[in-house]
Length: 518
Image (tube, rainbow, N blue to C red):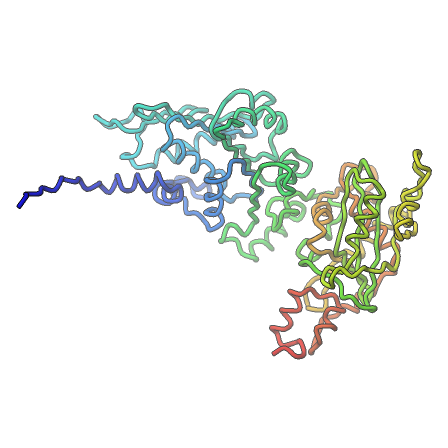
């Protein structure tokens, strides 16, 4: 028989196993090794304990090239982005990261945070170059006010460098990863992006992480809106105030009392909250949780009436909306059309195409009337025909809207004023479905004019609000008493007549308030 000898295999140490796990998993690296400091408790060092939503973000950071994050205040996203960057630098020789901040103080703080995380990594993984153990041959690092360098034995050094925002900042570097912190509040944000993007736009692919709380009228908002509309390559992530699981409803109500003008922007519950104007908002009664319901379509019966409203436009946006009038006289805008650089004929054709009951095999709707801004009757210099003339050729006959601007806004405020609805929850005489995306986006960003408090600032996009104004001025105001809380049992048809959404009806079925459903 032959003699076989087993080749001696050395069992890896615990440290080697942990290092390999950390190399393969950013989450493991953070969970096991990353520490941060707590500003509320000076001198406190704590593990970076990721919340569920933060773990979702880390997963996206590892697979997305361009990421934009809209967030509430104090959610630890800067720490998280830096921890991700540190992981890349530790395990990738030559990896370079640039952090862009509002000012020099904020830039140095980014470096300080990165240095803090390095300080508390295990010494068997990396050591400070000026305090390394005798005989140490592994990773070392150095830190200055604006630069951290990680030295890889036998490889190129990895670097993290922070810059304050300036018009030329984007031309000062070439990097693997750019972290843009509080992007909405950076001066020269557009200039920096225009200069910085080519530095990461390589075939091998650099990465950008832009994060910020919201601020209306900024380059950050422009990039965010384009990302949501699929008009750029950014992957959009929104993190509301509930991302921190320690924040309760009671905490939020207390925050609203202490920050009555800015709580929506600082601690948004939804994306539109993040770009509110705060103090000076023209529609302070607007609340997405009250005024917006799930996708909904009116019942196709004679008890419901359909009204259209229109604001003409070509170079600027036009806007057409569909409103359902309930038997009680309240209204829900359930569809909108917001074209840009579309001819009158194309607009008329598209309005007709959309004026159907989708739930009823595209059966055409019948408008009780369509109200439009008087500009729709201005003849074209080229054809002599007005928009109203063109629409009439398609069977879309319109009446002229009231030009009483201040009275119109006052009436719209009344229709938006919240009160208790038929299900015992807050509602309003005029509500909207989530299909009215432009309406939902623009309401919280409408700002009061500084020269006329009774009007909206010309700097605020408000075509959707103009259309709502035309609509409410064409209607008598219904009595709020018709929306008293529902008690007893009802049929589904009766609840639909009262305008309840499918989700609301399902809730009433669960409460046993719907006849024929046990």
